[in-house]
Length: 338
Image (cartoon, rainbow, N blue to C red):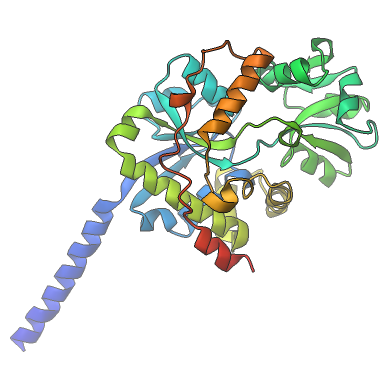
């Protein structure tokens, strides 16, 4: 009897120690996104919701962004561990100012930045350069807008600042507005407003999006933590796109009550239709795929457009393929996509 009790106590103690060990094994990690929680962040929320991060030994906290949030300073002082870049241009700006960060993954092979016009107003993208007014965010005036004026026939005379209100665009049927293909056009369609949307990625703008940036000291000292995050995020994204994403939706709505299932369904559907995420190199190298050679091409294009001076951006430190292009999750994708 005593032996039986002792054995039972021993088993319980061992289980408790194992549980305690697992709890201690969870590496706390804060990941800051580039905007308020939305479907375009879904794979990261999925990896929390279905326990993927935990299975990789990570306790991930997502810090959502927004119009008044700048998480980059928090990354630099260690309050944030990993950062979703606002754009490839913003990552290049950080590099040009000698901030010690590097892009370690790109979870969108295409940037969602687009120009939209009222349906039927212009027959094709080339005609947009004839519009009297193009609403563009101030932050983009010296980014993709310079590329458009340098190589696609647009002029600064058309520029008018977009302040994230669509009212001016709605009031002027001949105007053109900057938009994310997964956001403004879909919201307008829900209100009965039809638009024509021109995705810049399909017109030669080779920027990545949903990139993950890390401090170089973390790359040097904790590469295994970054690797776990990238791998687990890839699994999360495959499950989000091709599996049951309801639990991820609930977490997103908790962070951003303005989101609805209908909005996110439309957003994810458009991302898949336009090939924003699972396309290009990601099809053979796995989600998060990154090409330093492509970064070189994009940098050369931005230098040509006058966005950056020659030599201002050190592409060798701008991004690394160290943590990606390993085919992580492709086997899962094969099972989920019938």
